[in-house]
Image (cartoon, rainbow, N blue to C red; front, side):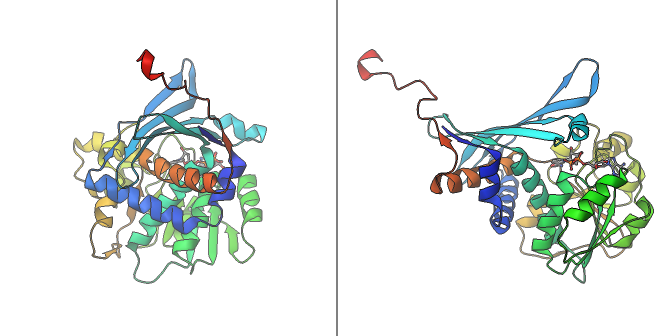
Length: 334
Ligand SMILES: NC(=O)c1ccc[n+]([C@@H]2O[C@H](COP(=O)([O-])OP(=O)(O)OC[C@H]3O[C@@H](n4cnc5c(N)ncnc54)[C@H](O)[C@@H]3O)[C@@H](O)[C@H]2O)c1
C-alpha cells in the first residue's frame, strides 16, 4: 500500500497540466466507449444538518491500464471561516489483478484539478470562432482557481480575468493570488461579470438557481461546474452539453430541475465524451449560450489518481506500507 499526502500530490501534479488534461480526456472517451463502470454517487447527509455532506464516488476505468477505486469527498462549507478548505478527500485505488487496495491518496487537489481539467477539455472542444482572450469567474474559491490554471493551458490567449463573488474579500484574495501577467478586475455585480467575456466559469456553493444567464454575450460558453446556479429558463434557452445525462440529472442540479419540469431530457444536446470520439470540430453556437454541466465522474478521479500513484512511486514520494494487508495464506493451510 502506497500512502501519498497532499504535499507529494502537489509535487507530482504541478507542471503536469498537459498530462492531467490527456488523462481526463482519455477517461471521458473510455466512458463514451462503454469501457467504464460508474454507479451513481452516494450522498451521505446528517440528521438536522442541510449544509454538510460526504459523497462516495466508486468507479472502474477500463483500458490498457485498468483501475478501480473510490473517491470519498467531504464538503463542510463552514471550514472556510476557520481558514480550512471546504472540501477534503481520500482516494483508494484497487488492483484489477486481485482487488487489493494499492494506494491511499489525499484527494482534494486531485479532485479540484480533474474538475478544472474537465472544464478546460470542454472549453477546448467547444471552440469559439476566435479564441477566447478573457474569462469571467463566478465564485472565487479553490475550484475556479484551478479552472483558471487549466483554461490558460488550453487558451494561452487568455489575458483578462473578471471576478465575481458574493464575498468581495474572497474575490480580492483571489485577485491577489493571480499571475501578475493577467489583467484581473473585480466586477460590479453578477450581470457585469456575465457580460464581460464569452467564456464564463461558475463554481459557487449556491444550492438554488439564481441566474438565467440573460446578460451573457451571444455565443458564450458557460462552464457550469457548481451545477445549481442556472434557472430552468437559463438551461432551456442554452445548448446543453453534459458529462453523463444519467448522472447529471440527479441531486437537484439545474439539468435535473429542467428534466423534472419537462418530463424528459431531450434538451441535452450532447455528452462531452461522445464529442471527443468524433474527428469533427464542435464550434459553439454563435448566438445561443452553450452550457456545460459536468456532474463530476469518478473515472476522472481514478485517471488522475493513477497518474499520481505512478509518478509518486517513481520519484520515491509517499510512504509504502508493505504489511497493510494480511500476508498470503501458506499453501499447506489453503
Ligand atoms: N462538477 C464537479 O465535478 C465539481 C467538482 C468539485 C467541486 N464542485 C463544486 O464546485 C463548487 C465550488 O467549489 P470550491 O471548492 O471552489 O468552493 P469554495 O467554498 O472554495 O468557493 C465557493 C465560492 O463561491 C462563492 N459563492 C457562493 N454563492 C455564490 C453566488 N451565488 N454568487 C457568487 N459567488 C458565490 C462563495 O463566497 C465562495 O467564495 C462547489 O459547489 C462544489 O460542489 C463541482
